[in-house]
Image 1: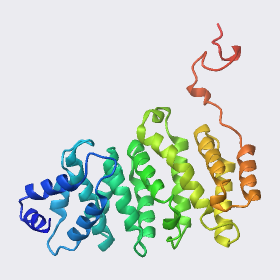
Image 2: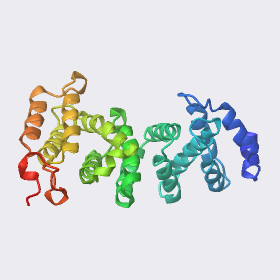
Image 3: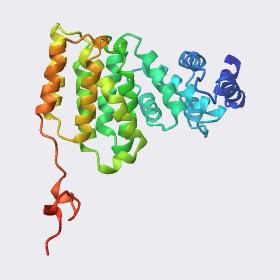
Length: 295
């Protein structure tokens, strides 16, 4: 593999592509992520410029159910490694962003694992969440949901949350994601990326709210944040995911006192459910005779 990498940096990519595809264990539910991680480390250790190589590998035209899909997976680990070594390398972060928005399941699995490993290094969890907030400013609608879904899955891991020097950044990120869900058009329900985000958010929010336990100052801040989200929730989609969050928080695994969870439930229950916007309603859409068009 090292010989093939050296050849690829000189412009001969066939052997490297072939080895990655052959040993990537694809198609299967278990891609060879250890090989991809080792490849990323080896690429980042090169003294020559590797950006052109990683760009070419990332652009490999491959379907999710083929062996060749492992080639862009390996490239994802290379870009993450470059971002770790050079945090100001915006080109590397832009490439990571493209992988996060990828709709191929194996590629999403690869970039998620690469970033989980990335967050195991000092200061990298904070850098990733800061970058996530930057992406929230730049993204459009549908790609934003896919990117936010993978990032929410990553930060649903308590081992990563505990590495954050500033947990308030994670709360800000989740609040902005919840706001994006609230503002989503009705057509978003047809987007697979949106559905993945709705599935990921309850676990992510619950982990964020419970990560500091139930007695510390940090825990009080997290509890106050989630209670505020429950109080402000109006859209049915947001109320549904917050309700699922509260159900998860009742699990002993989260370690929250029953009184805290009850307070969250009360805050959500006291909120006013949204009504359908009348300006969007056509005559006959609502319930009862009052919705019928008058003659």
